[in-house]
Image (cartoon, rainbow, N blue to C red):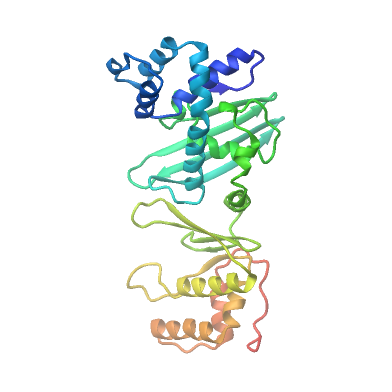
Length: 324
């Protein structure tokens, strides 16, 4: 764990320069050696050895020159990688969980990322205690005291809630807030991740809804890990139409291949069944499937009650009126 609160400006500077080196790849370190005439680096094969060589082979003035010239480019690259991870455009991993915790004036923000291929996770944490920031990440950059894309995301979130000085690599709030168009949407995503499902099927297929934001989560049959999709709609009609179509298709899709039964809801705090049954086309789609499965002809009201019988929680159940 690393604490970022320094009384000595030279200590802050030295830690920032070393952190800059720890935040980049060994190829980028070699480029810096070439560009700034740091000779003798080729015999160092490991990243930590190369960093220690650069630190001992350069004066404070030379380090200052490198830091000033390279800092912006490196920060922008980290911000770009963080951006891609936030918008689910990262090719290697995705955010699977983010949690807030605040107890006894200690603020803790944690994030879990999971890889698309292989069974690996990245755990990241930022803690604010006694006006100090303590950071921890087990990725290859973070574990070596570098500033990684994972920590950058948590700094983006924290900077929305705290006025923080002495951020690593002299990051300013303005550098973070230039990504403001995605920050508000990401905040919605975080809030949904930490809320209870609004709609939930018996197989834990869930919909989380907040105003026009929709987060859908399910367990992938291929990786056996949780997958998800985050969407923001332009109006409530678009959201309703998407949910009605999607939930209807889930209802008529049996839990197991070859089964002849409708999939049941466990939670409906959105009143989605009522909205579906008020749609003649979708209502008849469910009715037709039920008849095919069980060779029975229920009336619409009985079918409505049948689909509600397994629901443990509903705040918006309405009596069915067929001309609604």
